Amino acid sequence: MGESFIDFIPVIGTIWAAIQKPKGSESSDYHYAMDPRNCTTPMEADVAIAACEVALSRQAWNYTIVENSSDAVGLGVDAVVAALGLLRPPVGWVFAAIGGIEGYIRVGIIAENNRAITAGCDAAKKSLCKCPCETK
Figure 1 (cartoon, rainbow, N blue to C red):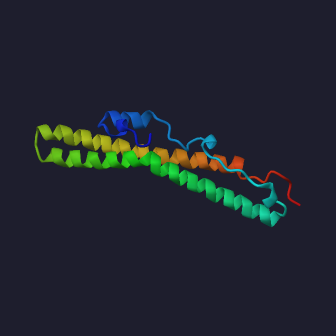
Figure 2 (cartoon, one colour; figure 1 turned 30 degrees about the vertical axis):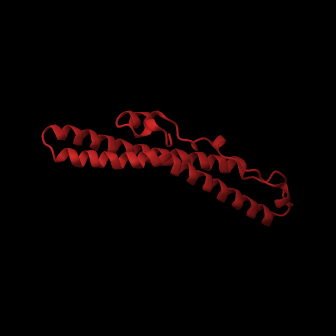
């Protein structure tokens, strides 16, 4: 996933994107170290946890942009192929069908990437956004 050359090849790029696991879909893709000095009181702990969650959400947003950029470009290419195919019947209809089907699949890939990245980020928040010491 991301911006490799294979992502932009029609049909092959779509298949490749569908079988790849997006970066950010696992909690191990996220990194944040809570500072114990920020957890001395319950109020400080709440602020530290909120800062951790914001940092992880930013990482998830970056993963979303990188993982979906080639699919978004591919979706545009599919739309152009479909539109141009409609202008040249009946042979062009084959290209229009391929572009339409590929576009439909790419929309599903983008939606699944977003769901997987959100789930990975939520799991990372649960495991990483904890104060390492007891609050008083």
